[in-house]
Length: 133
Image (cartoon, rainbow, N blue to C red):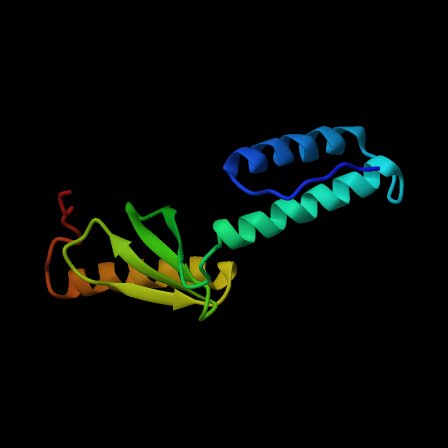
């Protein structure tokens, strides 16, 4: 008998996660008593977390790109739209860019910086002015 109980609160959740971690270290064979226990415990943990700690697909994922020509950008991955939406950071102007893949993101970021610097040069304006706080 496996003696597995429902997870009813966060204390039960912590105990279940500890048991899953313990069982994972044993690396049990599928179909063995420990393997069955691991699978059942993992399912219980996943169900509890999905109900009590759901991940909202509308929440974007934020990141900052490495500098290019002394400028950097903040990027959000919009989960529902499946696109990266970026904005140059640390400047007083609004310069945005979008991409569908990581490869396109880097290229779009570099193009945005190059266009921004070229525009500043054409209008005889200092390229960037750091925005405080």
